[in-house]
Image 1 (spheres, rainbow, N blue to C red):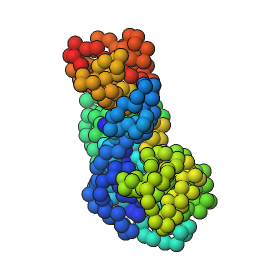
Image 2 (image 1 turned 90 degrees about the vertical axis):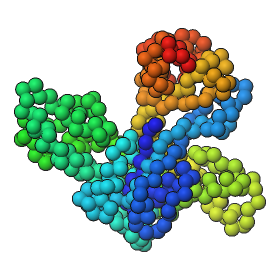
Image 3 (image 1 turned 90 degrees about the horizontal axis):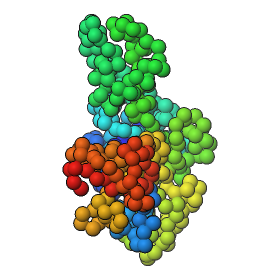
Image 4 (image 1 turned 60 degrees about the vertical axis):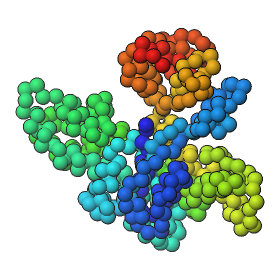
Length: 395
């Protein structure tokens, strides 16, 4: 399962984003380091369910009238402060928890109402662009430290006649999610000494920055957009060299709680909602304020940020394996039971391995359930494909 990590300084709204997205109970408070232990939960990225092509909706518990929510893991760690890679604040132990993340949501207080340490200040008093840059810098320097701490092993290997730098660095960096292709691509883009013993801290830092960008790409969540000065949002958009999604985590959490209480009709990622239950005048005023923000930003932004991270930045597609190509069901008759997030360019064979190693090893052929035609092993799958895998290992 893809892991999305929430990073940022204290009191930026990470835990509120986490609670809204997972509906799990975590501590949410207006002081630094509320989250002491990393919270792990499951949320979903939203896509269009293939059941919209059927006469009836699929009834899957992750499909809401054709809005399919594909599971991803969400990780919320304690807030980072400048110098975290050196152990300041709660330091490296929390940076280390980002090791297995596939993509990072940098939750920024776009209102400028908290300083770099996460302490409340007057709204607009702090430049939120500093928060965008320092979190990325902390992650880069943390990874540079990991490389430096393990560099002696690379130097020892370099004394062997058959030494391969790419292989040695891949072995060192596998633990942070880097592949041989990642290492090769980064080495092509940087200058470095041929002899590892001649590498400087600056050389290792260049390597770290390149690897981090490939293995831990970042989406900026400009949180508290409902109270942020317009110039702050413009500054973040213009100054950040990565996707920026304005958001109100408070608004999203309020809507999800209202939906659970039957007060509103709302699905995560909708651009609007409908009041369907009895609400007080005060509650209606609060909901109207949220609706105004959603109108400005095309929703609360929380679901958009998740989708931007997985579908845009990681470039994933959603594919649905079935056993019955005619009915789009599994062996128990469940319509469209599973959804897999695969890299763009994935083939039916890749899908088979994603379902189960035995299915992949026994792969024979695949059928496009939409057209009921056999497709080749090297066929590039597309978003929303429904595929029957035929394997010697069975369904």
